[in-house]
Length: 398
Image (cartoon, rainbow, N blue to C red; front, side):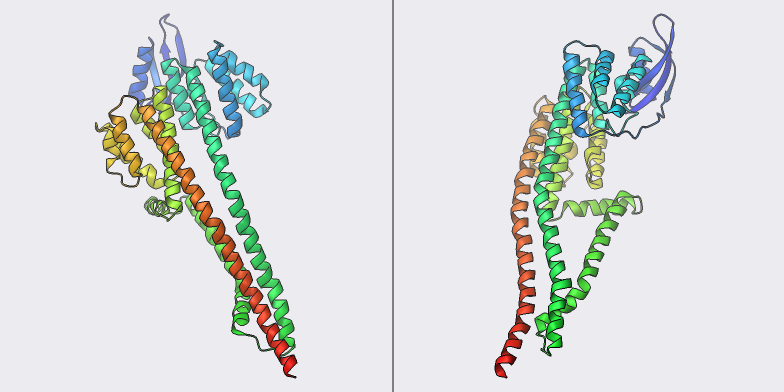
């Protein structure tokens, strides 16, 4: 979906200008004519993008308030004006005032929001666009608020679930690092000065303590390089695609990533199809909710098949990466009439599956971390105790 700047004559033969969202220039001309306008020029707009950001929570609050005001019959511009005066965040308040100016000049709300991609993503803007064309903007804002609240809840649950294992892992590494690099060398030095022959375990751990900091540094550099290369264009698109597929195939972690991203995709599809956006445009926009390049690639192939006349279930049939239950629910959904309801059912099922698998993973992960730390600590204690016992034996022998 692109934004086009137009100039046209209205019914009163007055020249007006503004912006309109359409798939291409031909559709833009058609939409303007349907509105009773006589288009003079339609040019794809290259709007200057703003880098202003707000939190997901603040966006959710704004969306709920917009829904409430519009449902009460408050005009769009007045609703934005009221909220701009209430919002504490001055930057966001200024954004709302700019939206009012754009709407006053004849632009739509959705096209005006495109100037702020860090605040309103493509799913949000396209859903608003669908609401504008179907004259159900208040209902669309209500659905968007529900969507945002669910996304915030899921992110919070994932963050909270990962906090304990990560903290436990950091503490474990710190304890092992301190024992290996500070405690063990100092104790061993005392044994060496007392002419005690070091056991094999003590010698091995002492040598390991010398390289342990470098091992940690190498691991850190590898992780940093992986993140950097994935975020930039250093790697070729083909290699990124293969790497993305490998991540999805990882034991334990892969299925969770796949189910979670597919659930987010279904949530966006439900939102936009319910608002009235056509299936093809919904698929094109929703695919960007995937963080995995491979999943985006698969949905691109699905879009081409749907454009060719295939149903959604038929288009997804050859894509083996998606869960079996996803395919089964799509087939059953094809038999019904509500596409949005079908995607909501799939999303709810996948969310439950993600939660179950995440709990299983955390149940396995915590004991593994504790057991690994326990083994290391036990080995270090043995490495200290064995020479100590040898020293005692020498004393008793004398």
